[in-house]
Length: 137
Image 1: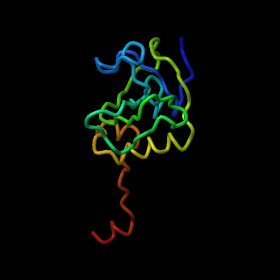
Image 2: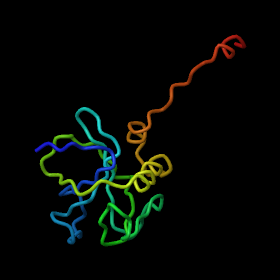
Image 3: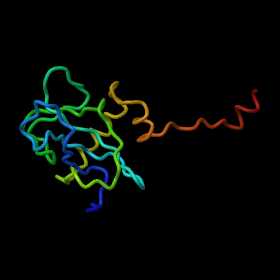
Image 4: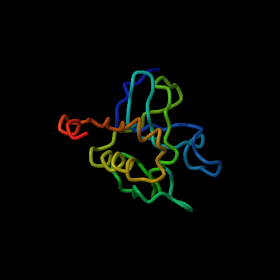
C-alpha cells in the first residue's frame, strides 16, 4: 500500500515506542513527516512527557491534529529517515499549519536535533563571495 505522503502528515509507526508504552498499539509513536523526497521520508517522533524531555516544542492534549492523550514533546533527538514505501506505518492525520510550523522551527532551535537531520531539512547555505570582496583580497 502506497500513501501519498506530505510534510505535516502524522503517522503511527509501530515498534518505535519504549517497552512501557502500553497505551498505543504495538508500542508505537506518532511521527510527524517534515520532509519527503523521492525514496525517503524524514520524521520526528512525538513522545509522552516523562522524566527528562526536550522543552523546545511541547504539546498539550488539546493540540489539534495530534490526537494526544498525554502532554507530549517533540523528540528531536530521535529524528529518523525512513523508506517512503512502508507497509507498517498508518496515516493518522495532517497537522494544521501553525502546529507544523512550531515543529519545523524547533528543528533548528533544539540542541538535540542531530546535525545530519538538521542539514537534510535545512541545507547549509553555500557562502557566495561577492565581487566586491574578491577585489579587496
